[in-house]
Length: 387
Image (tube, rainbow, N blue to C red; front, side, top):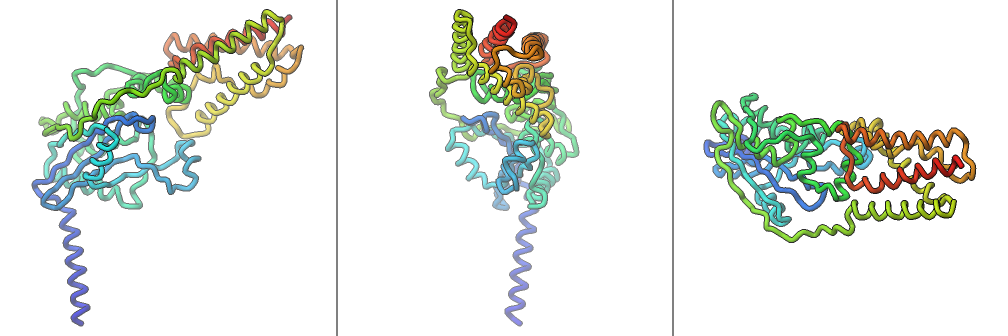
């Protein structure tokens, strides 16, 4: 009987202690952490997280959004189709500090001017969100990511009492221009982004939409107000990134590689013109490459839930139908319809230029030499088949 009483007493003490942990003390602080960019494309945009610190309760926890759920069935397929759920994470601050300082990524902290009730509400929200049944959410790079969650959860915890103002250095930009702030245009990552994402990211982002980037969470929070007071009570740098030499190798950059490829295409075209010849393998390679890229872009547009891969006018050069006309390239005399098809491709290339000039969509700068070479090759094919 005594053992049973002791068991109930231990259970009661355990439950009581746990409930005490859920109630923050008057000395509790909540803050937003902003982590600087890393070296890979995956972390090139930085990261945001909440920090809940309460010395009296022994709490110093960091909550962040955007963790991969590698246990999800068909992980890679769901990732490609934009149907992958991401997770909220929870870690001790000491572990987070060690991780980001180890990889030399800056850590800035903004302590928020929340009331005791707002701090408790935020803590309760995050704890509830971390429950297994609530952890997952459908990620969107621009509208529901690690940064926008910080903004939205802050508003929820304060009953939408936060008023965001424009930072002093605010400049109107498109989504693509905002991406360029973190990814150099002459990199393979930027090339992939510019090819995969459509014209929908070439519209001006609203002030609220700027906060899909962690650094703008920091700058917008810095000048925000809550109940006519500053939202940020204090700011500090917890870790300053150490400057390191750049490892960028321009010789292997997209502009150099694609320019060399363009030179090869132009040289072969010149030789073919001089010798009244046509290098079939080159044409088959170009039609296969552009056709396959076009099929991939069509899939991203119509076969996925990604909001940013629609209305992609890279299809004006990566033409999917190129795959279905390759057989004509092996013939000395092509069908009349194929001759018309080649003329159509030339016209489409002109449309691409017009789309770029009037600002419908911005295309990858590194593609310019390759596209010019392909266009010249197409003009040569039109002349060659019409002899």
